[in-house]
Length: 208
Image (cartoon, rainbow, N blue to C red):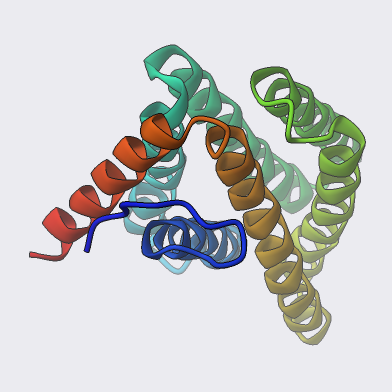
């Protein structure tokens, strides 16, 4: 089903696919980062398999950005999101070793990475607001850090509650990200229609 006309009073098929895809990616980010943290903390033996899955997610984010913003911006998005995952793993390893200085340093760098992502997103799209992204990432990272430390110290009941909060926060971030994509390209109907139809075609190809 192709998009042929933009209507500000409804969500098109392509727009809904974009929203759903970004929601799925943010939820996978939550689920698989938790799985990696749990593997790191417990030594289950599935660390490599979980890591391979988790580190595919920044690449999938970058695919969405490449479609709308080009390869160079997509590569930077992939780098920034990959760094976020690497920092989380570093914090878990430092916590296991009892290296509080390294834990604190990792937390500072994680917040800095969130700020870097917020700034970069608002530089490439005027329909994303830096303060909004900063608030979203600060809340998200605070909860993620608490979850990471809860798992690393064996406070599993607390970690489950924090994980539920993260899912809600991730959906808010996904919806705000999708809103920015849509508002940016709705200014140019023909360009938006072409890109959205291409996005639908790519989704259909993955499903077959």
